[in-house]
Image (cartoon, rainbow, N blue to C red; front, side, top):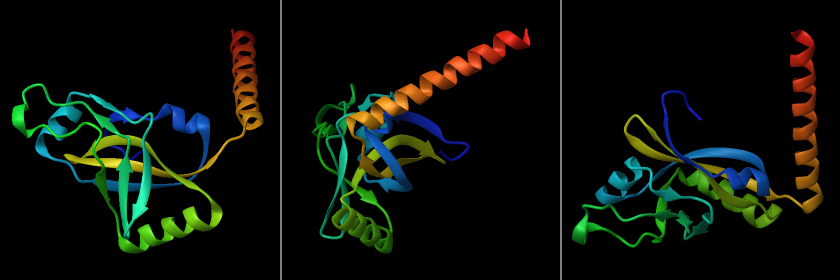
Length: 153
């Protein structure tokens, strides 16, 4: 996450469900009422994923609630939105998805210098035992930190 960025939302479930191999910052093509709705923080990335079609990145399943005062200019909350990235980046991501079986998952949405950016993660799915190991490591770290804190008093 770059400094000076105002976070709109994070996809916390993505880091639980996947190993993030690599991240990429992309722009996103939106209409005015969607940006106003994002400023209000009414977006959900939980069920979103990214697909490559005809050499373009498309985010699907991202829910941006309709803007309250938007009337006829509001769009479908679940419509597909195009992501803006360089062709060589898209080509490289497409190869990774096809050859290694990785998944493209939106990790966060934020404002950077007034523009909406989406942090995209090239991810590999976790198995159940991986999730358990991650939870066990987190609990062990928490226990160690607690013990050190109480010993320093």
